[in-house]
View 1: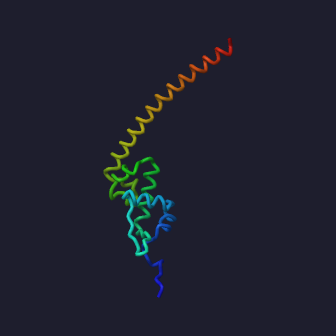
View 2 (view 1 turned 180 degrees about the vertical axis):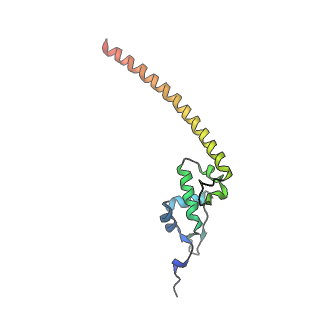
Length: 134
């Protein structure tokens, strides 16, 4: 008798990719970074349980929001939460606040660089205009 794969509650990497919109390469990356786990068949194929769908969706959301892998690791078991945003875990606020501080520092530094570059541009533009006028 041939086993019915549809009865298996686990899925291969291609199915998890299809259900989450993540590429198989991203899923392997999450696994390499310790954010996602799988079990291996005898043939080496990865197998994921149903909970991996929610976990990957949360990972994609958090990473897409600009958090780093290190940031996301701090969420721990909360990563598997079916509604991460409605019932955030304790580390979430700290991670978000820290990331916002980092972004604010970068924005301030870039604003300073932009202001200097704009002043230099105006200075050169004025010198170029005065040369052409005279």
